[in-house]
Image 1 (cartoon, rainbow, N blue to C red):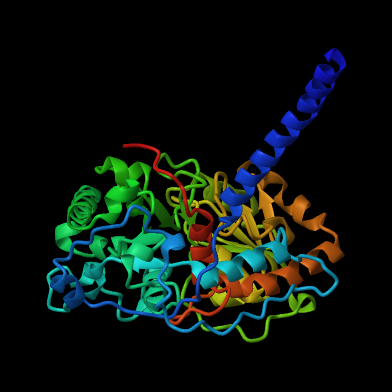
Image 2: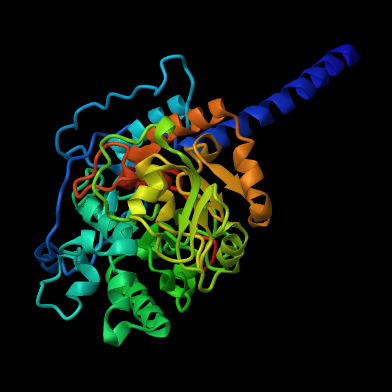
Length: 441
């Protein structure tokens, strides 16, 4: 009997750690990849304000209103995605793991649903039309192009749903940039008051905010004044997701791994043929203001007269695009904010981005391996900049150049979004955050 008890004890000692390991592994897989029941493909839909008025504009959310309760009455499946690795040899190129990303991305396309609050369909005669309606011409918005294009693309995408009880996420469609341009909402204080009032209103008119404490709600902006937009609403500040160009984890109101970095893109015509490496005869290029940036001023003071560089404290002496086309490396240097369209400009023109900006939560960093298509430096490396760039082997540079050509499609916006473009890469970051719980009440 003693030997039998000892034998059973030994088996328990072996099986208990194994059981714990399997349980933890299961939790990690479910948390990271969102394993769950499969659902139908989505079909683009719209919803009118009338539909909300007819139901009192108030929904009674079921206890579980996420993807596992999707209706089978959705429209027919979209065409199956042809997902292939960028390199037939199995090399993930500029990705951390192409095959893993591609499979999860396809699942997102089949599954993800985002509900847009109906203010986005206000009448053009409404006093708040400019705040909520999509901008009629985002191409004229310069540095704030991505903020406006996200909304426009979402309304034309396959992930929008008119069934809020089925949504993974809820989009609050106010525009920080539009508010900044209105005399009655121009200041940071007025914008934060407006946003706090909006969050309070949707939480009283709809049931969905209260179901999660706002943790499945998000808003998008590129204007730097948006950093404090949520400061006067505690749950919005702590729980809702910022999709923002100002993605600095040094910023007190940006929470990395909750909030999402939005790629800042300047509207430009597609560069059909990239200038090849052997036609890039300048080492590095930078042109921009140094105001409010000690880092930029330091760079300019040290290198503006070096013959290997094209460094300009303001506008360049030649067309701006020419600086990107003829240079091997193009410098992104922290200004007032970490964000700038120079990163996407460099990628657009096939110039290797050199990132000199501490605390930058790089866009799509959980998918893209930035070390394979850019050079990442600390701001303290500026005195050694030339030595660092000249020490990069030619083959390494050619690999960086090849990978820049591959990632270009991820930094492009389209009114009707295209596979793997900036819109779908951004909502993929949301997809990875599905199921996040509230962090404050």
